[in-house]
Image (cartoon, rainbow, N blue to C red; front, side, top):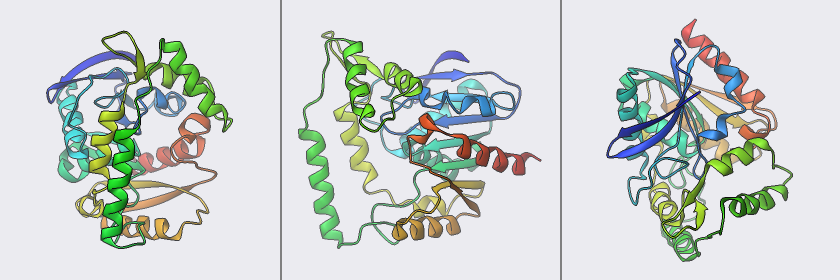
Length: 291
């Protein structure tokens, strides 16, 4: 994989590109992660496709930004990146935030997206395709409370990159999830401040801006515009009936939607732990398009 720096939409993005001659797949990570999260998935695709791994704005080694964290703005970043790389159309694989960005691309730039895989953006927070059970007023009070909690929580700073990674290791070891892939992702996601301290690249301010947008996304407005083949990745045997109903409803809004239920899937961290089921489902899906 070749490291590249791409300027697009008034920001610089860090990417990796294997420059294969096949069709391009653009991989878009979840909020707080970065392009390194896909390392365990790469071997399934690298001999067949051109793989573009992206640090979304404010993440990893991409440029920090105070604004621009709406899914539509971040979709413009990726469309601009494609133009810079000379890629007319691509498959999009997105996890959580990355799925939202890919969904915006498929809805608003249909000529740029061959197919879309969503590990996330499978239900809105509120509305007919949402999971909130209370009133709209109660929902808005909940949103205000959550945003205030984000804004008032002190940013965590560390004296070294090693100290930052150690703190993340301690967190993930509680779940027995820590491995070399998570370690590489956390190391890639360290940001050094001007005064020589270290913090997570996607910091408190960017998180607050993103979440203020996220709570009010109505994904149904996007799925209704998706005409390309769509694959939604879901946990097999999920017991959350509201989530399942919302996902099924969104799938039916799209022109060519299907759902793949993955055994023992834990969104989004199974990309680090065991992506076999998801990668095989994606390969089967892509094969049905290009066959």
